[in-house]
Length: 103
Image (cartoon, rainbow, N blue to C red; front, side):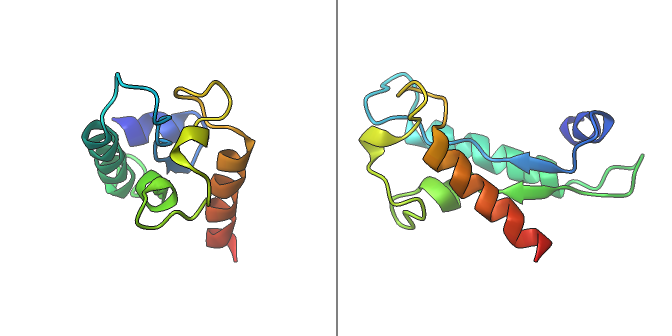
């Protein structure tokens, strides 16, 4: 259903969730990883209506400590409001990941 809504809105990709700021105690890393896994499954689902799946921007791959692709400290995550809205550096990293599919 998520993928059908994406296509109905004219989209063709699903973005993973940015990792929340370290200070935000209302959302655990386990919940963050779970949400990204669910979004990945939604993107990989092949819609019976369109016969297509969607590209997926992996939030864990961009924000996890093991990878640290973005190169910012956890206290700087979600720089737009320092809780749950990605800032400009995070959006730039997501844009680079999306652009890599075009090449």
